[in-house]
Length: 589
Image 1: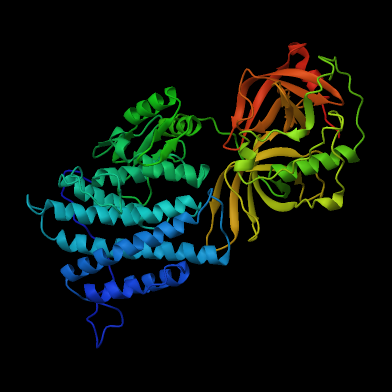
Image 2 (image 1 turned 60 degrees about the vertical axis):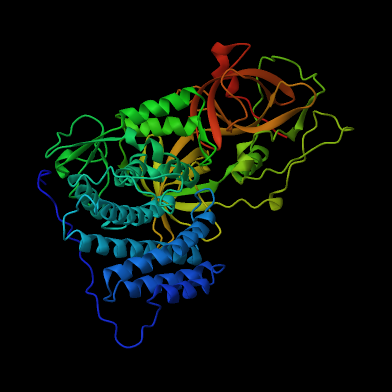
């Protein structure tokens, strides 16, 4: 594409037909207003089907452009309310693979597609003439609405890990190039349905979609993606687009092929010869802003109710820098991965195994006797426990004041808690992970950062490894048309045990269920995995091991998510021998 040549809009639409007889649906503003008032908005499915049918009908009939625009503007607020109802039902970026979930997903996509098609048709009609000084805002209004409804389809797909709808990026590239060449891209317009906190430009709407794509949206939760989508609009000028006829693509960074149907390309993920790039993206100014927020402890805007945590800001910086990351070689594989989902069931399975397998004698040098009567190892510390915030439930097992603080809860019988084990198919493996394919039923929910216990089974020999591995979900791809899910799993540890730790605080000290990861075969230092905000680097904790208490200090962070943190640590008595000592620590109630 020669960027000096004025590009025309060349969208293809179905031929419009004249109205034959009495119209089935309302075709005047007054009729449409009455029809909208009678929509059953409390029934999202029924209202959505009627809106979908109306837009389909509107996009097929031959009416004046002026009337078409008036009808679209009349229905737009109702569409906005419908979308708010839909997004309100999405919590924590959990996959909804129910039949109703799939139907609503299809409806929302189709409605946004119908709105985009209608405004794109009007834009192309208007673009038959070049914009003049007095008519520029009319062009910008249609450009903004077309980009917004195209982008809404993309945003929804990111929220539920679904594949990107075909043709979206190609249409958005074409519209933005049209606006850029006619210097319409920087003109501000106010539209509360697009952005209710101020005016926006076509460039900002386009860059918001670029930003979503650059931050690897299938690797973060919906709540985080929404915060970025809604909260970063005022700061998008920090993204610079370097436009040229032929941009030399080399090294690292994000590039755009405006003739393609894909978004920004990270050169780590694509072969350069596959694309002839026209633009390069410079994120340096936005990264500097993010780094300022990080140094201030995060970003919060009371007007928009947007809050970016330091963890999320760190993630955004890494994604926008597009630094080279050495990727482990993946090997095509097969077999079954036995999987247990969630912290609650992980702890239950490990607890059962502790009572089924013989326990080696512990040869530990005691750090301190458990003479502190204030330590109650049977009361769980739920202060700031992100496991609870993430819809995990751990039953508190408490003792009375008359009981000895050292007494342990009774061992639950197997029949008291059912542990669900899922057989997932292994597609390929790497030294620290798996790519799997599975079918999730309607009862099973999954999200990024979910904690898993996994054990591979060889497909040929039907042999399984003796020990469970601890893993977490890094990314997801979902097909809304089926229950099939592809996931990338990162192995946090090859050998995992359940332990109890406690903080040294005044009054009653409470325990926290934690996991000890001891990978002696990999010659890696032992680590502790605990709920996200339970402890920080430098904290001193007490570890319970067979009626004795050992003091440790938390060192650097190994891995973290919204739900948990994984730390290196050492024993305060003999830090040089910590791996040897800790490998024997196990708590058995």
